[in-house]
Structure formats: C-alpha cells, structure tokens
Amino acid sequence: MKRFILLSAIIFFAGISVVRAQQAIRLTGEKTGADTQVSVVNVDVANTATTTLLSMDFILDQLDVPSNRYRAFTPVIRSADGNQEQRMKTLIVTGRRQDIVFQRDGVDELYAKNCEVIRRQNDTPQTYAYSDAVTTQPWHRGADVYVECDLCGCGDQKNNDEAFITRLLPPDPWELIQLANKEPNPDKPTRELHGSAFITFVVDRWEMKPDYMDNRRELRKITDTLDIMVADKNITVNTIKIHGWASPESPYNHNHMLATNRAKSLTEWLRQNYQLPASAFAPAEATPENWIGLKEAIDNMGTDLLPHKETIAEMVNDLMRQDSLSIARNADLAEANIKGRFPKDYQYLLKNIYPGLRRSDYEITFNIRQFNTIEECLDIYRTKPHQLSQHEFWRVAQTMQPYSDEYNCAMQTALNYYPEDEAVNLNLANVALSQHDLLKAETLLERAGSSAEADNARAVIAIVQKRYDDARRLLDAAQQKGLDVSKNREALRLLDN
Image 1 (cartoon, rainbow, N blue to C red):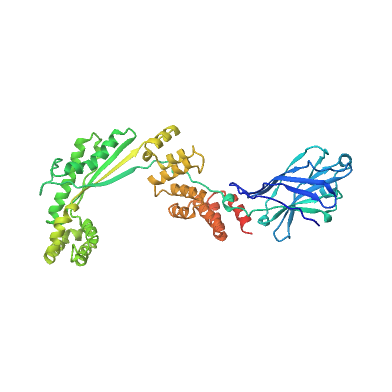
Image 2 (image 1 turned 135 degrees about the vertical axis):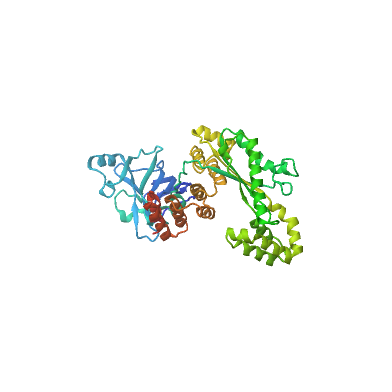
C-alpha cells in the first residue's frame, strides 16, 4: 500500500510536551485519484500528565466525495514496538445521499462509537477543525501518531492507508511534577544585634570618659545603632546588655573587679543618654580575663611573630580545659609561666594582642511591630525590607505571580534576612526547582527541615534524576504528614514504566 508523507517542523512549548506540524500533509488516494485529495495543517499533539490531546485542521477544498460514498479519517496512536494502539475519534466526510442514509440507518458500526460526521459540499472551500483527547498511557512515550484513511468508503479497515503525523514526545518530568510551598510561622520573632566596642579606661579606673582616647569613635558603634532604633516608630528596644572583658595581665581578682565595674560604668552611661524604661538595661556582666580571645589570636598567628606559638597555645588550652573555678584559681599562674618561660613572646602579646582583648560586648534585643495589612507589608518591603518577618515576606510574595522574577526576588530577599528559617529555605528551593536548578535546590533543602513540603521537594529532585524508588519513599513520607502528592504519584506512574 502507498504511505502518505508528512512534511513537518517540530517546535517545543513550555507547559506541556507539545509537537506541532507546521506544514500541510497531503492525502492523495493511490487508486481513486484527485477526488480524495485532503490537506491536514496545524497539527498539535500535547501530552500532559493525564491527557493526550490531538488537534488538526482538515482542508477539504480539493476533496470530491460521490453522493453515495464517504471518506473516513481516524487518528491512531501506536506504541514504538507496534504492540499497542489507541484509536481516536473518526472524521467521516459524506456525500449527499450517504449523509441521508447515515441519518436514517446510523453510521457504520466500525466508526459509530466515536465519530463526527460532516457532509462534503463539493467544489466549495471547506475546513474541519478536528480535536480529541484520550487518557495518557505510559506506552505513549515515543509512540507514533498516524491518520488512518478509509478512502474507499467501504469500512474495510484492512485495506486502509495511513499517514504518519508525528511522534509523541516523552513526558517532560518538569511539566508533570507539582511543588508545594510552606507558609512560615506567623509569629514575629524578637531580634538580637551583637557587637563589640573597645572602650579605653584610665589605668586601674572604671569611670566612663567618652572623650578619652578613641572612645567617642568606639561608642558610636553602639549609639549609632540605638539612635536609629529609638527614632523608628516600628521598633521597640527590649534590652541592652553589656559584657565586659579584661586582658590576662595583673591579678585575676583585680581584673574581675575592673571588668565588672567598667561594664557597669558603660551601662550607666547608656542609661543616662537614652530615655528608655529602666527594664531595658540588663545587669552588666563581665569575664575577668579574656583567655578565649587570647587563644583565637594565638591560633591565627605564625611562628615568625610568636616563635613558641605551639607551646604557648598548649599552655592556654590546658587552662581553658578546666572548669570556671579552677580557671579563677590558676589563671595567674598560667600567665606567669608564659611570661617567665617566653619573655619575648609575652612582650609581643602584651603590646599587640592584649589591648584587643579589653573590650565591651553589647547585645541589643528588640521587636519590630507587626504589619497587619498587605499595604503596610508592601510599603515596608519597598523601603525597609529588613523589618519584615518571614511571614510578612510570604504575604508580600503572595501578591505576585508565582515564580515570576519579582516573586523569586521576594523569596531570595527573605532568605537574605532569615538564612536559617526552614520554610524560607524550602520556598526558595522550590524557586530553584522552577528554574530546573537542582544543585541550588539541594543545597537549600539541607536547611529546610523535614516537613511534608520539604519531602515533596526532595521527591521532585528524585523524580527528575530518575531515582524512582527514592521518590516513592519521599512521597510516602509527605503523604503521611498530610500533603496531597497525587500529582507527583501520577508523574511517577507515567515516567517509571
């Protein structure tokens, strides 16, 4: 039998797997001649998770159908191995008398269950827009689509010709899967701000002198922050806590007295300069000798600066392995041993490292008020995004088209301010998956916790990577936690065949 030729250009569309035949298919009967010329154009085959859709235009302008005959055209999906096929709706084009017969007696049984009958108006332009849909089957992957042509109008299927239309694309896993975002906790967290100021005090004194040495510059590290907070109506300062540190020289008990009183002095100076509730100023704290800072400094030095670095470091470590009471009893002896055994190294530490160990750490805890309306959230997002909570970033994103540039930017900004929040990491991982960036998604999911939505995202990665057993396990876990994963299970059914 003669086979008809398909001249086609294949193009791809996002959203569903699609092939489109741009050029015409001309169906010309071998035996019956010019009267069976038909053109087929605008062929679309779309393969979704659940449905395979076919549409095309039959151009009948050059088709002549005798009055008592018909022509039948049936699209057929046939598996790559030829063992399975699925017939779709048949287009029957009748002559005048045959159309009357069909109306009186019914269509031939071969086509009667699923067909569309139209009457050909010979010698006139005529187009039929064909469309039909069938349930997607796993074997549709790589299947061929034909149009079976009954050109004799006799219903003899064995003698029918067929025209190749196109080949179905394998389902694209990215178009089958479904992502699930997680709404962050609506509670607005208390925030903390930490820093250090190197306030200089007169030797053996603890009175706060703002204009002494570089104190004015160092105080600005604290006051610049507090000035901004106090002036902002959205912010409430909860507590200001000062922790003082002294360097290890001099007797331990003396250093304890200095560090404690200097922390109290700085706390009192802040109390006098800021009209905040008395409860905002936490009791000052102190660590008499900053052996922690000394250890870090020694670890970062080379032997060119500290020739006996390894031995001194071990002496410091020996002290720090002890409990707090033992450190208080033995600190002076440890410092004396370093000074006595390695006087040049000690002098270098005293001159270059010890000054930096005398510092005042500050911790400010504060609250930012809730922004109750979406208008407020959007305004703050544009002007002071750092004041939004995780949930307020979420609300902002819900006003945007999911996975649009502005939506993705909002999710990324949320992560910039809340890098450890599980929901924020998950939602940005879904953004990465929407962009097919598996590496970024996997990295973000390391901090996304074990929620149902996080399991679903990990399952999506497994599906795309063809790790189907892992995907099933993860989808089972997500479902047990209450998430509807039916769409991703259907994706597995189609892909793992």
